[in-house]
Length: 385
Image (cartoon, one colour):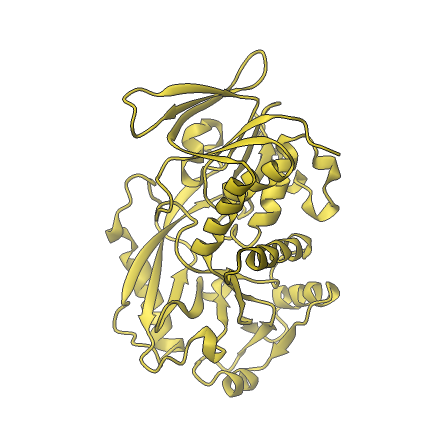
């Protein structure tokens, strides 16, 4: 069934907005993708070279299976690597209810997953040092998405299918009384903002979403996440040498990716950071979080040069109070996707499909696992007001 011929604006060309725009173009909609910074850039939440992909931790696998399929199909089409499988360790004590539950979900979904005891971890990954009471769930399907390549590949395909990318800052977005949406755009080449009308709009502006949609300010806040890289003198903590993703966010707030982004540098992050204004990021405020990461590296990854990180970068997470995103319709002609709380990249092909279905009024065609109801604003008291 062909899509209605809508003229749609997607605000925000991060990975969520880019996949949404691609899905809309694939459905036959005339789509304009608006990005305030010249592409590619290092602002927001989608820059950098690597993101973790994991099956372990979600309550169902539908969106993950679909997303991995789309990543791998795009990889084959573009002829460049977008994903490398490394496996993932998620730590906890034996019998941990969270890990038991999610290991069962992965197995029931037909994916392999097993429990590694402390001794098994020490034998298979001798570079690690963890307490004897910790084992780990092993998710062999986990791996690394090459983030910058992924974003660029999605945007290239979008342009090849006839989509349009506009570099301009969206200063306002509002429904029109007679239908449609007015978007106020300020380009870098123009002194005054211009007004553009579209039939529909999707707002996926990451940390800038609440500025465009003030009603969401009570549900969204932005944190500055320090992204640290640690020298690997022996080059043994790399994806090429079989080093896995370490997911220790529940117990310590920290996770690590093997070196593959920068040669000889292991990426270690604290899952969170200080509140920040996306236009006034202060590097000094992350020092306590970098110190926590340094303690983790010193204790658990002794083979790395743990005196100080070789590189410290920043990523902005747009958080919600329950850690789940907002994927919802705002009136008849506007849809929002925001608040992915640091976990949006791996799901982005599926999320883009959901947002496209909402704006095209085709959400009834989505499978049960793609239901947007759980991500609606109505889950909070007064969320729809």
